[in-house]
Image 1 (spheres, rainbow, N blue to C red):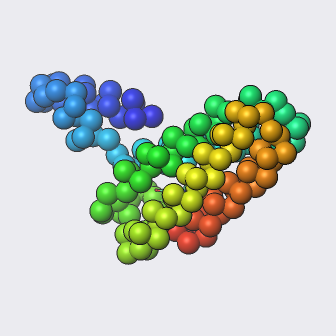
Image 2: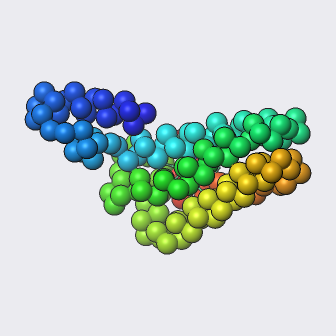
Length: 149
Ligand code: HEC
């Protein structure tokens, strides 16, 4: 989806200003859309992982999905600039009041997703099933506090 924004931005900028792509990305990328797309990918990844857990495998199917979760938690905190509690967002304003706590919950999710990826690579479905539940708990822990209903 960022591609879409970049493309729109690039067309506008080429017409109006003729400035470079890097500048356009900074000017046009909507942080709210960017983080929502990352979390949306999380939802899809968790559904795919649940299907593998329910079927007791294959663990190999979990690896790329866990990788998506890892990618989200590595990159998403960059999409919470000050002021982005305003707009089409379910992000609570408390995030910016308690940034350290929010970042800690994100780090917990990253650690859980990384463990899931590692155990999936090792092919251990018993661990994968436990890790899947642990990851789910980290999603809920943050949503309960920082995602508006
Ligand atoms: C550290 C906090 C945090 C963690 C961890 C977290 N989320 Fe979220 N999530 C949010 C916030 C905040 C929003 C609202 C973002 C917005 O609307 O700007 C959100 C939104 C979402 C959305 C809605 C996206 C959309 O379409 O607008 C989904 C789906 C989602 N999260 C799934 C997950 C899943 C699945 C996990 C765990 C694998 C997870 N999240 C972990 C904070 C978190």
